[in-house]
Image 1 (tube, rainbow, N blue to C red):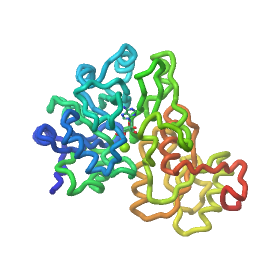
Image 2 (cartoon, rainbow, N blue to C red):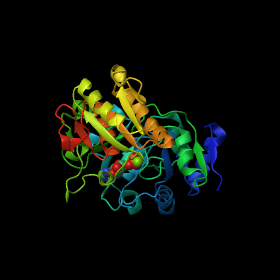
Image 3 (cartoon, rainbow, N blue to C red):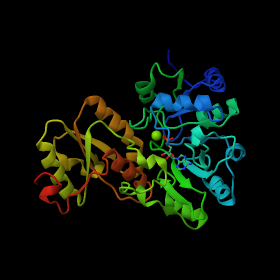
Length: 349
Ligand code: AMP
Ligand code: MG
């Protein structure tokens, strides 16, 4: 199959809508990452997403809508959901709510709930409006690869496998949406994103963060969200996070780096000089820049064939929680404390 990579002109949006209405797949930009969309009400079309991505059938899809009215067609709305929608939609917030029968088991992976979101991107919005359909759309990457933040990333993974990719340039945010479970009495963050737990608590008075957001699942522990069972955001290189005082972190990383010829370092702008002439990628001065750059950098490093990545960490507050979550998952939760290294934890310093 030829994959059409198109700018989102009115003609091309019409074409994309036709493909979606007739059961095909279209990748499109959102403000978080690119999505791989299909008609959420067409079971066969939705199956196509799982096949194209190689996505495990137990990992549910998020349904993208053009507003509260469409959301109410797929889930059972409530007052708290309305308050969050008023505050954060359109935007990077997915709400998990009881599903309606119109949504198939394939979309929800058999769960009684469905994730819904109204994206804040004119192309996504136009596309949903033109189809008049809710679009099931996970991130447009092969399962296990870093999420795509540019159309070229989607081409890398899906050229020849899907009919069309709409190119909307770079995604503004760069990490996937916040997922908040609204089906219980207390809103609970299942996946951190650009809408922070602090912001949700400002609106609703309280907000829990699922413990599995900050650490790996324990053996035998039930995953509050199926996505937690899978190793997402994985680069091909072995990645290690190093936390602690910046100078101690740099000493640890430099020693590890010096023992191999295929390592690269991820560091924040204020610390770049601590790494001398070594290969470093700059995560930027703050969490928002790191979110914007992270997946792009991980894909670039994969392409260059590095075997080891050593990364600094950042405080897990505000948007830092989302960045740390993605870094930790990319590193399979391999985190070293440079403040108190022991011989068992890693290289000598
Ligand atoms: P992606 O579509 O690739 O951004 O991944 C969607 C994420 O949302 C997955 O990690 C899912 O685990 C999570 N998710 C979607 N629907 C639900 C749901 N009904 N309950 C819990 N988590 C969900
Ligand atoms: Mg994904």
